[in-house]
Image (cartoon, rainbow, N blue to C red; front, side, top):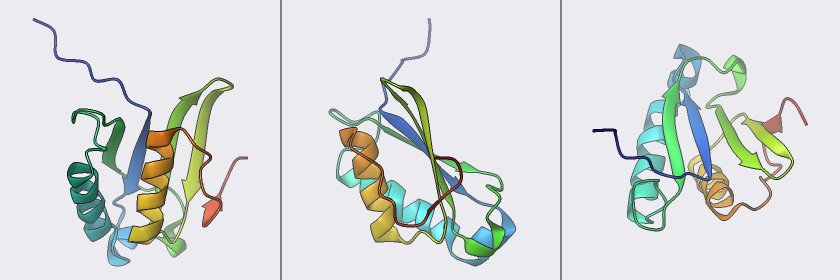
Amino acid sequence: MAPKYFKTSGHILVCQGPNCQARGSALLYKALWKHLESASLVYYKTGGSVRLSESGCLGSCSYGPSLCVYRQTAQGLEEGWFAAVDFPQAVRLAQAVHDGSALPDEGKYGPE
């Protein structure tokens, strides 16, 4: 028997490197997970579509917590990199991923 597949709109990675953890990334991950669960945005909830994972270092060590977003669009794979992310910003990012709307520019760095 194969595992159950859940269609997603995108994947958010929250850095758990030591510098980001010192700036609250572990707490940010837990708070964002609780929000996705309660708002039914997490991929396995009815109507949900967002995956959330912890990751290793995302490279903006002096500017944590850092998040990275990957999602498939009509133009191909989109990626968004964000530094110094707080909870309200993380919620806005998750909602944009779920809705398929433009990712916010606040805190964005990396490739265009």
